[in-house]
Length: 200
Image (tube, rainbow, N blue to C red; front, side):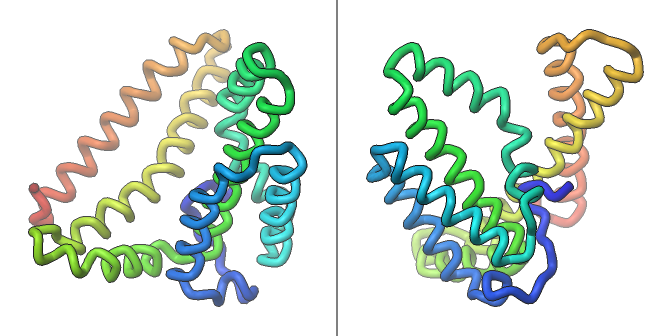
């Protein structure tokens, strides 16, 4: 399964496109998503992104994998807005979240993390004058991207362990061991960074 942040090698036009251009499109899409105020517009935008997955040779399973970890959140959001503001608004809100998640996933699946980090470091270069360290910003971005699949993997491990023990699907029984494992991973990562001189 390919999750957010897991680069998939390829030779498609999207793979060959500059990382900076893809990030610019992603930022523009995020800013322009406020203009998607009808279910039809949202559906068209999602359709375009799905075509992007096919153009990149990722198939239909890749977008499903991007959304699977958010099923419960999307379901809750959908029900909430159905009750509060009706189906058109519910469709727009959930559809916009789906759109942005799929777009971000498409960028990370077709772009090496190192290329994304290089763009961020370059963009932050002028901020060095006011005390910002572009390399540290790039490191934070790299760690942030990497942490997404790590947390998803931890969640799958907790879920598999619960199934093996025949435990019921209790939110508390799932969340507590997940948080503990995530904190242990964070501690180990912190120790590794300190050992390499990144201690601020």
